[in-house]
Length: 92
Image (tube, rainbow, N blue to C red; front, side):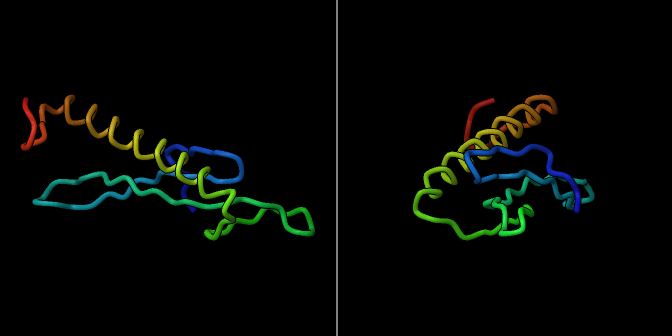
């Protein structure tokens, strides 16, 4: 499995960002994807992960996802400013 570009950990909750390359109109575009998981040790001491979480882990998941979202949007904004692109709903 490829390594994430970056991970945001809050307690046992981790939001990891991966990149998928897709083709659109003959151009390669990088799309950020977020994988959310909870890490824990099983009874043998081995690390495992799950996508279900307890009520105590929900606020941690929210924080990890907010950090991932901020990273993705700031990076996208930075990438667009480097290429001269802009949001058509916003200003140049």
